[in-house]
Image (cartoon, one colour):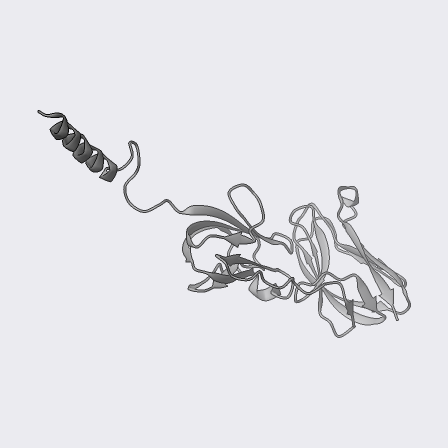
Length: 237
């Protein structure tokens, strides 16, 4: 074989090799990337990537979302271009979704508490979403309030829409108390008012709380106040 013939043959072999898949490469579509979604047991909702970082921007493509719904009064919903999936409010447990994300803005939220339990991220080159509105405005006696103690080491006073309560007008409130653990109680102490559930009690109570003058309303689990189960709201006129 002449030198020219050998050169031509080597060129043909090189072209054929370039068309073959790389050694050890898997045929078929790329594996889905994994995200982790969590909602509850308190008033928290998160979406994180495989490194544990909060998701703010993603490439378009197929993702697996491992959803951990830890509360029977929250749910996790993801909606955006081509996607609208949710767990049930009453359900508790884990499930895995496979979703295809296109360019645009996606929102994840808890349906019953969407005013505060929500987040968003963008896919592709879409513009970043606007920051959420500030929380902690003054509530009035017409506002429905919920005090939740447990099931973990957390206690919170929030509006029915899920906003954290930091300032309250004087007046008479109806507060739904959700004591969710036999290991905790829920106590409110304010000027002229003091009431608590018992440690063995688990369930729901409705309290009529009269705040006659400015001061501080404190809510605690008396058993685990040292573990951070406490909070307060300022009472103003």
